Image 1 (tube, helix red, strand yellow):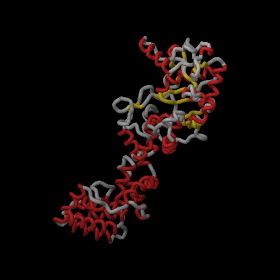
Image 2 (cartoon, helix red, strand yellow):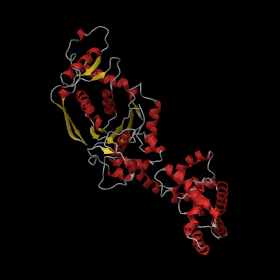
Image 3 (cartoon, helix red, strand yellow):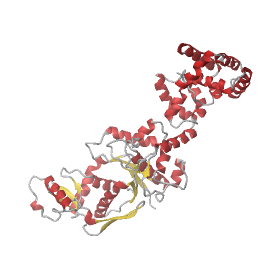
Image 4 (cartoon, helix red, strand yellow):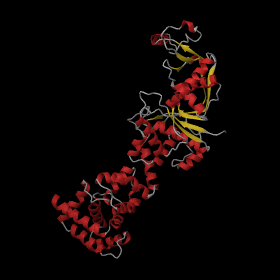
Length: 475
């Protein structure tokens, strides 16, 4: 195989959605697997709908996903003169022609074809007509003189051999009346000039491929190999929409998903490697091929994505996760984290990340290490009865002894808690749960003796005192 060069070519008319992100991933993996290049092209020829904000979001989304491209991104609109040059070359070779049909004539053609049950395409009336018949004051379009007999065949790397009768394809427009190139022409010229060897894209582009093959053939250019991957559907089997999760990739970042989890999940949406579910990016590069892409649509499942994200959170480095959650906690605090607070978060991360499914979960669960907690309803239910009996005295006595431990460490605190609860005639849980509620503001947290070690003896004593004050003003 000669050098593999793939491309991702989004239109900047909106966000980088999940389907586009998966197409980019497959193209990137195929190139990296073969030691080739992955190119980025922004197809911004729709000037009315293309925006700088959408372009920025595409760049941002690809970078967040870790899909680096080779060289500078190509802006399609900037190459319009080159696209027009090819159209005029086809015109000069007699492989294209000028068409002077009005919009009214084209509408009549469509209505007639519809009434007769034929494809609603252009009927070719200017295909062999004398240009001297051209009406005055009409700016013509340039149409490809497409073959009318035989078939256009694509040896698709995913779908297998697919073909269409040429009689089903009309003479498409290459240049509009104002001289601007159409999408069909621009894509072909760009892929040719960029030496693209493989085009991997959604199977909704298959009809476009038949038309684009006719341009390649007319120019005498070798076409790239095509691989059309099935679309992504929602859990109900319907076309993926916003209600299913068809959001921009930046939305998933903001929801607390890690890029490596997104890569793994998108990879498994339509591609398989035996029974493997957890596939690192390095393994994906080594294993990826188009033969293992399925031909049926895959179904987006937010629960599976969340579960996979939980795995990658557990695998992630503690310092990295602190960097991920720090901005979210700082937003809540309204100030930067103090060094002591960052240190606590780092020490506590191993216990925190075991339960988290997202960075947002993690930030919420970790916040008590950085600020004195407020008490949720379940915590209040545990704390309020403390003042009605000896509970507060028992816990205060335990903390006083713990404060004097030679080393305020998890194992020593737990050993003291066990012996102290026996001495006080209570269960270990009767000691641990009120402590958890007082120190974290919640009834769920990492192991409470681990939490105590990380907070330190003085902070534990101060937080319990604050909890007692809360109880006294609330009860």
